[in-house]
Length: 407
Image 1: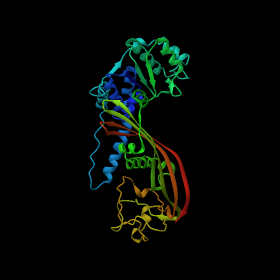
Image 2: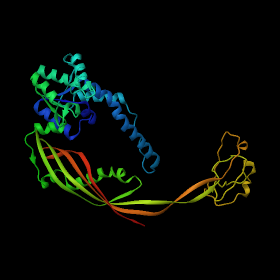
Image 3: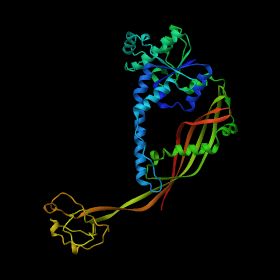
């Protein structure tokens, strides 16, 4: 069975290295099937890919620059310039040849798409057009798939998470009518995982011990904590220190799907609990300190050390009125400050008193919390050995905040 994917599947994993993608390619190789890509999907993937890689690249480049400015003992190389054209060229090659054993077939059968039919579906809000008469791109993809399936007589699987193709979890009844009227062998799936499960033999249910032989309990514990920590700032803010005092996971279910060629697709679900200690520092406003600003004329000052701040206050209208040699007080900075500004400082009246609020930590508020979550993972098994592991989903289902204390 040939398989057609929507654009979002390619953009989510352009390297096609995820567990689900590798399992799909194994199926295509085993059955001598092809990966179908409509020209509309091809164009959308190529058009959106530069934006898809630009955001994470610039974030990574900024993080690298920050590290380079902070680290002393280790030198971090700069991130090379992003060559978008080269990356797009590599993506085109990957789409045409997903693996050494699988080829991508680009469908250019625009002749099977009637402009009148596209307009009609938009006007009448016929799926996969949206209730607003939009998503005509999906209408064209659908008509191209129908035309290809009808001409070749082959079974085709269309995988798309787009809700305009669906009603609940299955194909929309109106689209089922298209298939029945044309006697077309097209099968719809909302995710690659659903396709794999539907076309693999009945799965082998794994016991807890069998599942943990593939993916260890310790590894799952670490994965659950690492991924849950990414969500901590959302619940407690970035200023709260969070320590994990205890953690545990509980096995729910696991299954292994045989996809042929010595390859298997595994899926496991667990629940996790984290006992947490939360610490937040409380600050109170103390008073104001009047300081001499750390700027002034670069010439005409008496003495080698310029006090750039002192407790107390002083008021003057012109820099010449200040007797620098007699300035006394508690210096807040000991480093002389000299600014060679191209301004006539003498002509500018200044008031040198600046009020600075001072905040002092007064106490630490400590509390306990418990976080519960559900985690689903998948893994690929080749010749009895796990070759790929992937987090599929992590959902926080409950958070309990407990009593707090002041220190």
